[in-house]
Image (cartoon, rainbow over the protein chains, first blue to last red):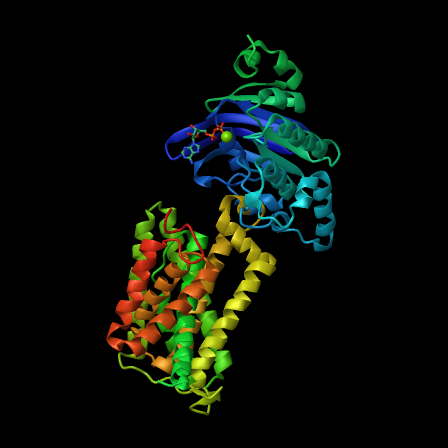
Length: 241
Length: 294
Ligand SMILES: Nc1ncnc2c1ncn2[C@@H]1O[C@H](COP(=O)(O)OP(=O)(O)O)[C@@H](O)[C@H]1O
Ligand SMILES: [Mg+2]
């Protein structure tokens, strides 16, 4: 069976700047895969282009999702195909309430009668959000905003979720909580997960396979188990000797 | 002066103030959705007055239906403006100031185009109601002035419910807060932006049709009102919908009363002095919007 998500010799140009230089990767249905690499490696560019959020002019190569070529499509069309994206830096709608943010996650769903119960599901997973459901999202703490961003993405009932640096700016304790939730989403809800993470240790402990990017190129791909024992990876990303 | 004069002044200041408010509301919608200033608002008001006059007086269509037709035409014009001109310029990566200049060019095109279509002589917009005056609490009021205020306030309330209680309205606000996040959730940001411009134009055109019976219809009708609407938007807090309404009303009240109590010569001086005072003392306006400072 073809992978759920596949990038074939993908390049991205911001004008003349060649930010991603021909990478290929795939994520199978049900998998949990991570993409790691230093700052500026091109991870966010890759994620946002998959979701149709960068200018299509800069794309070379192909991106396939769920059997269809999606490179060049507009973001809202890709989202409607069942690909959700938890953006780097969370991007909650700061002047909407928690509840309105979640409603917006379900924006394009036709089955409006199930939305309420899905919202209850999100509140059950993140009880802090329930306590704050009438609060403006901009007044939440960083960790709560991250939970809201994840909850909002779940409200679309996606086939697959992309997450870009979910631990950014969070305390170790909250990071643990967020990653426990991401694991649940994959294991219990059966949603395919592909995430970018600066904290390589937690990334390799959470995912089953991983890709390593360096200045726009894909340098290693392997199972997380092998990556953790790889000397280069240890040295560059795990703070080992 | 006796109380009934104050009452009359109050009604006429609320009438013109709510027109400023409608125009200011359009500035706010455009600013929120595109981060831009569009100078077409005033001339779309003029166009709305001419269209309304044509539907109502020349074609003999009932006033309420003429109002809806005028709004629909302007709505389409607003979307075409955004899709056909503004978006095209932004896609060429030109600076925001060029886009603003383009809106000034368009405003003159609309103004001259209206002259071409309807002539240079001021036209009379026939009365909408069979009576000259209605008596409210002992004050004689032109029913058209009252309609101006009531319809404007009704539109503002409808817009408020649309933007806060409907899914599409909420998605418009979401898209204006964070277009990337909105797009990632399946919101067609290009559509919500177009609708914002369409609504702005629709509100301006309705304002034109409401003020037409009071001021008459001529090709520069919207020029001053457009600038005053802009001032109202700044006073209320640029980009804030509620500030736009309040700012417009305050401006209408201040200029109408000062024109009558001091001298009508100073009408504009006082209105724009108020704008400057706000720019210096409270640039974020009554509703504390950050737009001007950023
Ligand atoms: N909007 C942009 N315009 C120009 N260059 C950009 C833009 N966004 C990112 N870049 C560049 O692309 C490269 C990759 O950035 P990014 O994808 O954000 O990396 P990462 O997420 O791995 O830190 C960097 O060199 C960055 O400067
Ligand atoms: Mg990044």
